[in-house]
Length: 325
Image (tube, rainbow, N blue to C red; front, side, top):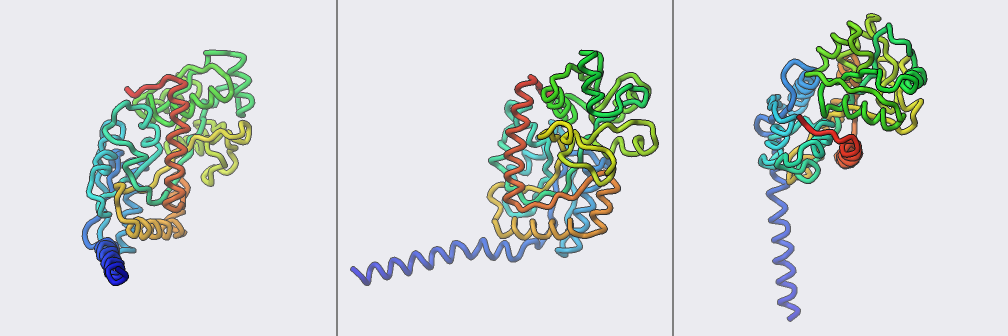
């Protein structure tokens, strides 16, 4: 019996090593061909530009080509679903964003569960929204803005880049937190909203900082506050809303994810390489110039953020009754 037990133990040990060997070998050999990064935004925007900068940096570090594949549609669900269903071999990645967290509540049946079906790899950057107003608007600070809104309920028209965008949902969180009444005016993207704000057709706008940055620097718009938890390096003199409303934060974040069953060795290696890119001064400077800030995280902490943001925005979306158009 003892001999049989020893033989069985040896068999199980060999089987365990044999099963682990292929995964270890795959991770050690990765990457040995082109790696595709699926981007759910169209070419030319800040998300696409930064994805291409990151892809180039990873190509140089790992000696294999990383390419950007723009898969636009269904509010980002088209590309995210494609990656969720892809082979978990490290060759199909997703440029994930806060839109994936909000989509979980905006869409009833996207065909996949983002939190369940992806493997978080690393954060890449964060972009705050900025609450901007036309220079003719009487309020110059957040306390003055809130006071004016309370004295004039329903008379402030604030714009966003569309229904269900972070700018819309972040604006609704601001309304809930302060108890003010404002009218949301959705646009098909930030550019037309900016045109109306510059021409004083709306009073305020929650906008991704890169879109409004040059107008703010040029004096065409007044920045009241950043929606991030802290101030932005791009505009260090502009306060964060959280300085007046503790706990308020509505930042766009972007990172890299992979299909759920991607080997941990590949995830860990890619996470390390991405964080090494983020530590590079030139890369950080390019992001700052675009109004973004690097967002280094471990895969575990990035996964926690995704889960927390999905839960946080679900509460706002359901409370405000927001539905995707």
